[in-house]
Image (tube, rainbow, N blue to C red; front, side):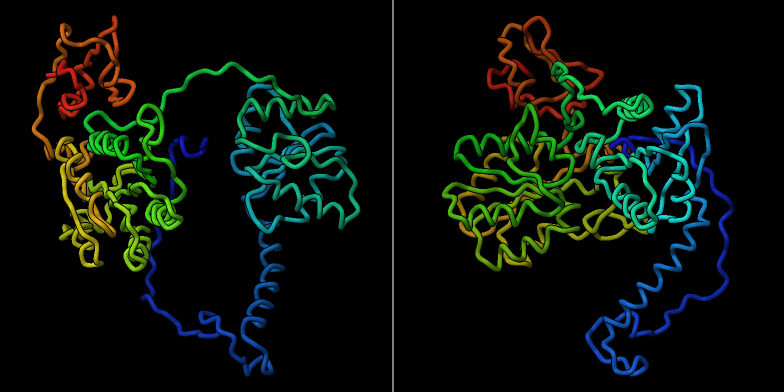
Length: 443
């Protein structure tokens, strides 16, 4: 997570032009791993021969890694050394800046490990602390190296010293450094007070919020279950929406929905999946569900982009980075596979509720295409899937019930002095909140 949220300037050298033409050399011995006999190896089976080739490569790789610039020793005084892998090394360098002194550090970035470099580093140390994410892989490899070369010292890390769970932080690394230098165990930190955190949510004006509130209204009436998937809409799992019951891995929503239903669950089951995920890894699950005559409703949030990770195009987008194209429409694909397809605009919540309820009543695999352009991406160019409107709160009608905040969760709506208030600077005028307010205070 720390790396995911980090940023920085990257400098690069001039790109080299490759003059040779592209070619592919046919080498079935390398690229076809069937259990066939290799004449050149005296009739040995190919997988065994290639396995030997890989083992021999390990010796070559070890020699390369000894000289690789990605592994290096930073000498300093002291008999306690520190090994940093990935972001663990970054935290060690941060600790040096804070302490204002140099630490004995070995930076490791490759597998196989540079065995000789490891042995050179631990020479003369009585203790070494290894910072890696998250399992003690490098720690165990270094223990093995030291055991095989009869080197005796304390090797500490995720397995025997640091917390086994959770990611590395600067505070964790600094606490470990101080404890190791003082020859003390890593302290058991007291449980802190719970501090409420901001929950994940969609942008103001996002079409997914209208879809989520519509699905929630249907599910609350029929007692159904919604299996979720990866995407901006997965924020509906958390407060305040609390709709999806599962998020496992990309494309899992459809087979999990089918599995719940196949196990005998007698209420409706819905799979909520984005268009990008649908094309990436949802087609196989849908094909299996249709083939096995599942009775589920698949809802595809079709916003024409991969909004969650940077607006990358996908087969349902109007371009493929290089050219404008005719997108593959997910509803047409689902219909061709044998599903009954329904359509709605999620900004029209009343329509969306009706369509999802109609789809639920049908037997078999139903696919609801909730189509509306991603506001954050397409709105910049004036392409939006709703008619913008300025919404006001009638304070005389508003009773401060908080449904618009505690259930709907639009970031442009707050409660102030017991009344709902719309922050105009954050409102994009989608008007979905007008439907959500059953008292009619939003107009």
